[in-house]
Image (cartoon, rainbow, N blue to C red; front, top):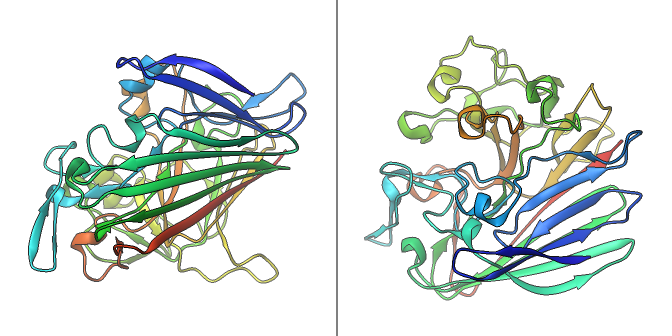
Length: 340
């Protein structure tokens, strides 16, 4: 189903697209920002919403928390909104102090995407497209981006592709806030998290990675076995970030007899809903949502699990390369498998 969701302040029409059957997993995606506004499953008292959402386009246009949006050209932070490449400095547009966050001001999360294809049915499919012009927030080259979103059975899949005409950093991701309790007023830290990760990236001022990889073993960052999300305030990095807002490297060994591509699991003891995330991205950013209380009093609580490239990789030679070469095709996938 496709319906109108109002217009932007510039007068551009926005549509809301519902994927999935009435008796199963459903997702509502906006053409504005590629926002996952709703994700819901059937429950004994009606449908249970599993992500946080806002009521209208105006709320999303002024949203400081990136609720549910597609993020690009570069998810997370780039230090000092600049990087060096092939002997020159590329200046980007800052939007978080001196740094750039999530692609800069009016990035992919603030644009109306093209609705390129839609198929209803037991396997619902939506394809969104966006052209990021040369110099967009400082990034070189024109980049053509496609987001294919599929709901089939208990799976929500996002496939992200891009191709550009100049070498440019690219790290595309999705930014939903999950609360699997089905009630956003239930504390999100009552959820159980597991991460297939032996290392995380410690951060310094501005939440920029220091460049080190720190073992999680025996620390507040050890989620190799499922545990409650309540922060353990016995680690200086918790104080540095005001909670969890860190990148976890997907370098852990898969558990025997389990699929090797799972990255994270999240579950709610309150609802019995669980979710497994599969991805070919090298890391997952875990944000505990601690900023929501001041940004949206009364909205509720949620946490983000964002498959992505390493933050600040264009400035960190030891990190995996995140430069998309001209003419090459960027392709990444994330799949959220729900059970209830």
